[in-house]
Image (cartoon, rainbow, N blue to C red; front, top):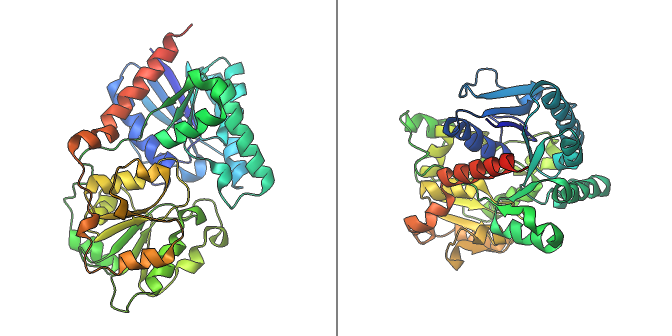
Length: 373
């Protein structure tokens, strides 16, 4: 029997974010696949959903943490590690992100084997001052130095970590994110959902993600402003998490022809993917970009910023545009149709991003680590 404490996410339900989506995909499925294992996920009380249900061997524990940007993750990770040690004594602690990863040495001192999943180079986010950025870099180093296993979520991230920490190569792995092959079946009233946002099926451009400057949604808004007045509306699905409106740039997104849809989840989000004329993701930095995988699974035409992580999806060259190139984004938006941007990827290629494969890889990693003396 293996006991696992998962730490570093904000919340398991109704929270926008790549880490949170990853955890929603991973832990319930892992608990179902390994019914003899005990999994406890620690979330922050401010993001708790007490109505959520999970498999019997998966529990979600809410702990208080101060609502102060980086301090929230810092203190919540500490509280979660101590709570897990005194109540669960987990065989394995699974830490998400390099900020919480600063506590990796403590997790080892408390007697657990430690896995750290590195989701992104968070210190590159422009909102952080140099002190927090330096702390995040230190957290990345401590994660690679003291974790028993380090998991990168994309090949580009793996290459980056390996290049900077070659002496820890024996513990660095890649486990690519996955989604279910058909996750977006919707049996509700399609027209009601679209009517709420004031758009029509196949008649809007979609962007999805956390409202954060690194996602560069402002580029989409600036490009959309250059179009004719009867152009397709731009729908931005997402929300701020822990940032002020100024830090997230949300005030600049309020423009004619732009629909701020707020956070959407599950079938509703999937429905918005499937009915979009075009999905665009202009981000300047990613660890993996789960929203792109979700759009890919939905089969929607897409255009992405030219990042190594986006290139891993294997789209044709014309589906990529330079980061920050508002003129090129506007040119793509202004096209009469977007059919040539629809991915034509075979099932063998798409199988790389299968949720079942991701679950199996994590299950094998945890089992091997537990068996290690």
